[in-house]
Length: 595
Image (tube, rainbow, N blue to C red; front, side, top):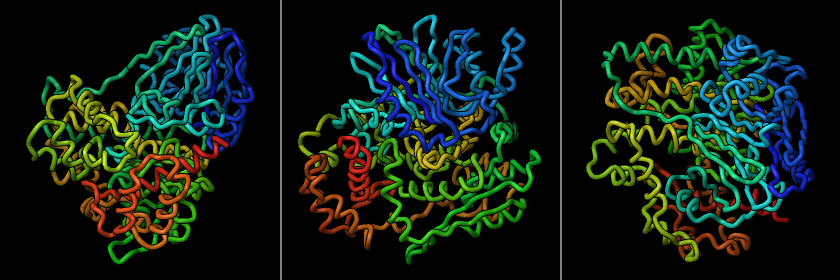
């Protein structure tokens, strides 16, 4: 797990090493253990390392194999690297390190661009092929690891984060209207290749990009999730057993592939509790577990310690509880937003940031439960969509979109009012072949597209801001392929995630399985009042916000005049919070880069 960056020139000029140094410096928190650079003609790499596998200097990056004429910078973990290493050794390749980075290099030498099809893991990497004078970039199937780039006529730059690219300079920071439309329709999700800035793109999940020194490029999608029924129809018992086996494999792979201790972010919900139970099944003992909680409000409790405590007691984990006062949340919010590669609206972003800060003092690697709701139908809006009528787009829009296109037009400045980009792009994704019915199409959209830029990006950004590697076993691509083939009505039974509840029964405490579904509660950011309202008011009436001309001033004034009367989005979002967090991101990330 690391921070990577590089530059390829198309104009025979040398790479801008000062710009690359600034970019690498902005990635230092992702990789606090080591740093390195590499230069070969028009190509330069830089790397910041978080040492998790093969802690020795033999796995220093950028890694160069002079005999093969290859160099690599890599962010992530390849969980099947030992198996691949043995296979490649059988093909005659010899190794000078004991980690997964070199395995990717040899895999590229053996299989070329199709090396990614052999990898089980989370990854973003770039390989310089000296002989072919070509740069090859790749991102994992479900987009767990990020990869941003900025291209001009003269050069191509890439980095693990968008702020790192900004630190390099010479980036168009004007707002992308297509991305802005998605940002305010899909509660912060912006689908690849777009980002909120015109000058920065991101590589899509399950995609490779090949770029030559003459500027020509080829993008290839190497994996597609099929949501169709199997030819042989398994029984319910067979589906449950297959789910149990796939979950155990994913958890075991991700827990054992590390040369440092591995913990679990234990929220007290079904998903993270099941991870702890599965670890016990494979023989892991005294696993470090970590929970965070906040101050209660009259409307709701703000911690789930009662559930995480019984799980920790059941399995004898080395448990850590972190109660956080509200004053610390508000004080930390600007720093958490500054750590975002792209603006995010979820109230629990700062919770992950505060939790990661504390967890990093204990371990370098944790397992987290993201992905289970999307893979196994855990959200309340899935059955509501399914019971509704109309086209796929109409059903999704009514129960998932934050606001209609017409409502969005009243929110944005007149200069940014364009077509309904989001509906058009979502319709295209839903219409892709390989899904049997509406729920199959919706769940596949979530697993392959929407999840990438909401919970997955949130966890990577907030944990890596403290040099903590978060792994997500429920996004193992083999487990997702199994879940996608499963009849959706089986997944939605018993208020969702029925297969996971079945394998959890008898393994983890019933109180955790039978509890109402919870969310990461951060009430001080959920309710638009008090110090948080004052904070938002200051942001949205600032000179910087007015000059930016993103929002309709009349709409902002109306919302601020009656914040308690604000209509929430279909999934409980606040327009005021959305506006304020976007403006805060621009002030903390984009504005400093322009000075």
